[in-house]
Amino acid sequence: MLYKAKTLKGYHLHSLDGDIGKIEEFYFDDQHWTIRYLITDTGNWLTGRQVLISPYALGTVNKEEHYISVNLTKEQIENSPSLNQDEPVSRQFEESYYKHFGWPVYWGGVYNWGTYPYIVLDPKKWDSTFKHKKWDHNLRSTHDVSGHNIQAIDGEIGHVDDFIIDDKTWAIHYLVVDTQNWRPGKKVLISPLWIDRISFNESKVFVDLLRETIMQSPVYTDDSLLIREYEIVLHQHYNRQGYWVND
Image (cartoon, rainbow, N blue to C red; front, top):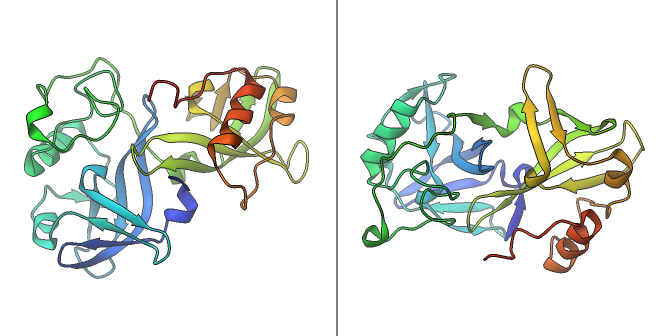
């Protein structure tokens, strides 16, 4: 199912032996556009450190009661490698983190989750887990990228307002773009597959699309249902293949 990042923000995280806090933000990599960690606000528990939860640990999303189950105990989380607040997530930390939990690393192959496009929890299926990919290690916060301007081929058009996340693969399938600065009152969706690059110095996301093409795309509202029929129309408008074709 597809969820907005803003919707999931504030959801509680239920460990095997109790609530561990709320989702504060997300870290994603800008190579595969996949969520790598949920940043957790633990309140008065584990203060002074970032508490990161990998999607490997996540169970079901309960949208009625606004929580996500976490298949870890509080003790497992507390004993995991520590990262100080506001400290960047280094590859050294990530290797220690994944070894601690015994999970395959996501940079061990060409797909979203290393050698697989989805999360595999069966150790018998894991390939060599600590191969290093050639792409740079860049984790970004959804908070930091929100507000970045969208730079089309022929000029700016709106800014990043939100992210649409798949709770099966934890891939970011769309950016919600607010175009109100160019044409009031309209939001549209853009796939990360159509992004050329992100300039963090300029706070811009560069896309290989014309402004008018973006403006003529199907309208997205907060009440829009992201069903497959809507996605098909969206991709047909852009004349692009859907991400689900090879599923």
